[in-house]
Image: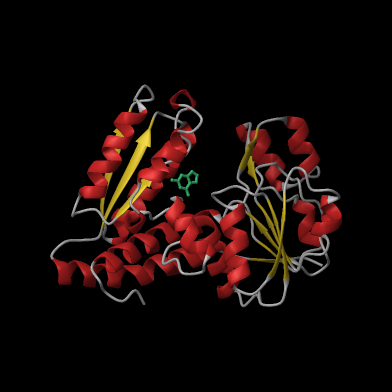
Length: 312
Ligand code: GUN
């Protein structure tokens, strides 16, 4: 069997196209566009790429996007001062502080920054107040990546109610909100993590299997129930030839990419899962593009809620 590929690129494009007229109407009504403040601290290469895409996409859908850049040497107080300014700003409806912050800021810096973002402007859904609302199923905004997964499952007509969903990974950014969002769609949810016993056996019970651990090719075909839907949230850059050879058989086009460029992007799901799964998100081109699309939707939602207008 060959799994149906779930196209996140096409859905992200549709979601962004739907936003355009709604953003334009907001701008006409209020005499200003919805505003997004993005804070980038330091020069982590991956974060710079992500942030560039967020700025560009925000501008494409018609937002005002302000990028606040701070050097890697910035202090936590300096970051908190930028957040306080954006919290108080009338022009900004959404605030996003790109994660990770430089390690030199200390282990609890990120939590303190997320704590400081006012819940109405928390378009990442990372603040404790946002997480609390999500746990009670009354959040207007939830984290972008897991929200994007739900949109993809809905768009592809994949039933969640009554199905067994297994989430591998318990991060605050993906695993935990993913489990809650699936629960709110009436799935029966199991969360697995590094201490889970017999992980393959639990994964094999899944009707919907979500992998979000950041380990290239961890989930192999023998972990997957035939016909299951497999969602691959991992984006791992593989530079080790042995790892690449374990993922792709000789002659595979992605192995050629690796040999050409010296690296290849792979998910947490091994390519051989395509022989067993019923549906599968590719990497790249599956969940990744939806994270930004959902951030855009969250920013418009924040602007509407702040203006006291209906969201739908
Ligand atoms: N780093 C990786 N993903 C994300 C995200 O969705 N939001 C923020 N703020 N940082 C990230």
